[in-house]
Length: 192
Image (tube, rainbow, N blue to C red):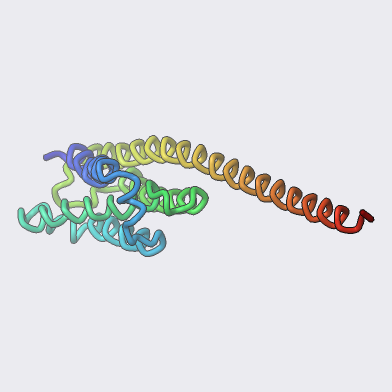
């Protein structure tokens, strides 16, 4: 398989399949997943970076069992990447920060493939194929990141509105309680 097609397959395993699995699980199940964004981000980044090292990549291409393990690990990395973003238990601001950091790591890898002066992998084909694979990685990452960030900004605005409404309701309740106490005090202090 040519490197650009191989990269496209890896992106499906890392992005599309995990997102589909998480959406199929539903918001309640995602919220109950014990995924900590920092640990998930580090673990997923390590998985992605290690498999992009020439020694690991070449070994996986040369060994079908190791190649399947690589593919499975990309699905796991994708679940770790997307669970904090899609989980209602993660605040939108935290999820945006998580998305920004993890997307930049993936962009760095794409840039390495795009701008390397020679093919990095034994079976990567031509330098043109490698650069095309890097461009695919960058383009998909940018598009996916923009869509996810737009959704998270919308969620952030909703969270802010909800907090504002809750604060207004609490202030109204305090005002009503204060008025009620004053009214009771006035009633008690009036001569009958």
